Length: 120
Length: 240
Image (cartoon, rainbow over all chains, first blue to last red):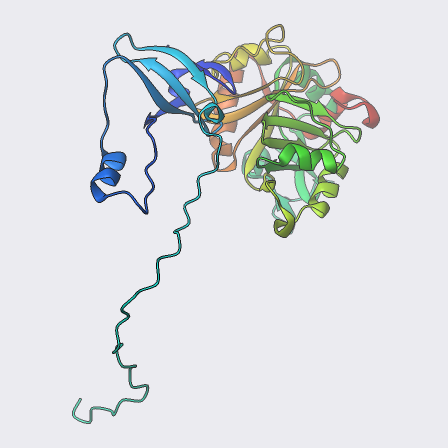
C-alpha cells in the first residue's frame, strides 16, 4: 500500500485520499475572458515531472498541497495550503458601472385582472 | 425494571441490535441506554476487560469548528492544547478532542454528564458566531467504545493505523478509515483497562456494529452494556 503523509494526520494509506487536481492561479471571474475561465476550469497541464497538486484526506475532509513527481510517482512534500494562500478570496460581484443608456420603455406590467375567455 | 426503547424515549440507532441481545435499558439523558447486553454486570465487566463493544450513543457530545474555535473555547474557560489529534481532559470530566487547529469535539462523561457542553451551548449563538460554528454530533455521530486487552489486535484487522498501546498513547486520536468507514478513534482507557472511543457516521452504525462484532469473534469479544464500562471506571468521580 502506498503511503501518503498528511500534514494534519501523518502517514496514512493512499486509499484514504482523493486527488483534487493541479494547483493553479485562480483568475478573477468578473474580469477574465471566457477563454481564460475555460482554461482554468477545464484544462490540465498534465506535466511529466514535479507538479503541485491538491489532495484531500477524506476521513477528515482536510485539503492540503502535495508536490509530486509524476514520472517517478513519488510524493516529495506535503503541506498545509496556508503556506501558499494567506488571503481570503472574496467571490462577491463588484458593483457594475452605471448604465449610461438605460432602456426607456420597459415591458408593460401584466394586467392583474384579464377578461375571461367565454368560449373556453 | 428495563425500559422499552420504543416508549417515548430517544432511542439509540442500535436499539434493535441491542434489544435482540435481551439488553436491559435505563434512561440516560432522555435516551434508552442499554445497561447490560444479556449478561449480568460482573460478567460484562470481565468481558469488557478482555474485549467488549459498548454503545455510548446516550452520552453527550458536540463539536465546534472554524478558524476562531480555539480562541472562543478558551474565552469560555475550556482548555485545549496546541497539538491537534489529541484529547484534553477538562475539570468536569468532559474531554475535548482537538481534531484540527480549527475543530474540536467535546465528549461527555460515562455517567451522562456534560456541564461544559451545556455551558458552551448556552454561550454560543449563530448571531454571534465569529469564526466558530457548532457541529451537532449527538444525532450525527455514532459513538461506540471498544475496550479490553485484545482491542488493539482486533483493530489491526479493520484499520491501517497502528493502535497498539505502545504506539498510540493515551489521549491520542487517529482520524482514519475503520472497516472502510471514515472514523475518529480516541484512546481513552477506563480505569486500568485499555479502551478506545470510536465515532463514525450514524447512518452506518448498524453496519459498523456488526462488522466490529464479526472482527471481535476471533478474540471472544462481545457486546457489553454501559454499566460494564462504568464498572471499569470505578466510582463516579474517578471515571476515565
